Image (cartoon, rainbow, N blue to C red; front, side):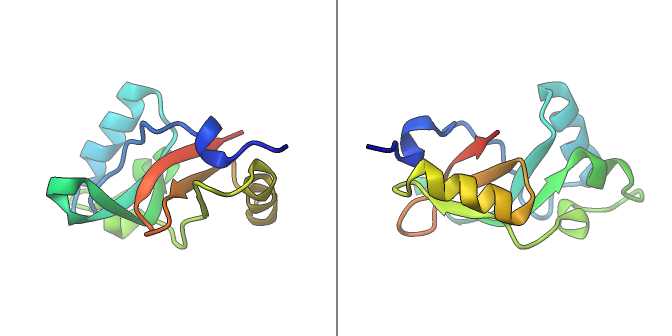
Length: 117
């Protein structure tokens, strides 16, 4: 039987709010050795209910003019898979969209992790 995405995903995902200054986001990505992060709107901060609304890479941010926000530099749409999907479905999404990672959401659309190749 094939594994499910939640069994192999990374639940620790760095996300940026859309209003985050691009320079600050770039600094954090570089400090953590990360290449990309989702841009998230928080629906209910008390419950950590974050929804991915875009994605931003260090390449997007390094070219940002002074005063730019993450929203100004993010790309859409975000490639997501559900946490209860088969890993073969995640592989298909990665291949179909030509990306190296997908972000993982629960049945309600809440961001819960990332899966990369």
